[in-house]
Amino acid sequence: MTGAAAAGVTRPVCVLVGAPGSGKTTVGQALAAGLGVEFRDTDVDIERMAGKPIPEIFIDEGEAHFRALERAAVAAALASCPGVLALGGGAVLAEETRAALVGHPVVFLSVELPDAVKRVGLGAGRPLLAINPRATLKHLMDQRRPLYEEVATATVRTDGRSPAEIAAEIHALLKQR
Ligand SMILES: Nc1ncnc2c1ncn2[C@@H]1O[C@H](COP(=O)(O)OP(=O)(O)OP(=O)(O)O)[C@@H](O)[C@H]1O
Ligand SMILES: O=C(O)C1=C[C@@H](O)[C@@H](O)[C@H](O)C1
Ligand SMILES: [Mg+2]
Image (spheres, rainbow, N blue to C red):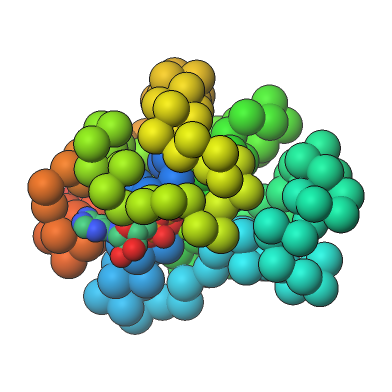
């Protein structure tokens, strides 16, 4: 038994970070299935906590309120998720969250703009991409790449690769640890 397990502390086997459309949810589900562990997504936790979809939180209470819910959701999940945990695309903007990720196995799913644009389409369900999705996505990705790299213990490229292939690479990386 590890020290953490002996102390009754639950930690994710893998935390996924990356831009909208990098595949955190899709790859995370495949990875969790392959490892036989639960999959958790902080976006889903936030919607449950707020009792409404993320676009409605942005409209009704604004982005600052959403980010506060997100910081709380990430902290709770890091302390209670025993499986694969996907964070929202903007979670790493919070210094508190970046600090909380230290010591966890964090995989940055990298994606370049052409594949990201294909994957998010018109940005449906992603409030930050509601206007001019391509330009906004480019701006978000440029701003956030250093933050994803700062928290990551490994980076896995996703361009032109299938979710199953990416999940298999992460599975192999986790086995090496
Ligand atoms: N490697 C891939 N190749 C092709 N399509 C992909 C790949 N990964 C994800 N997709 C598709 O791209 C879309 C976005 O993927 P997904 O929702 O998993 O991204 P995300 O990183 O969770 O985004 P968000 O930050 O908005 O939650 C989905 O339609 C998914 O099927
Ligand atoms: O990139 C972002 O800032 C976001 C990504 C999504 O996962 C959601 O967390 C929300 O739509 C905000
Ligand atoms: Mg997602």
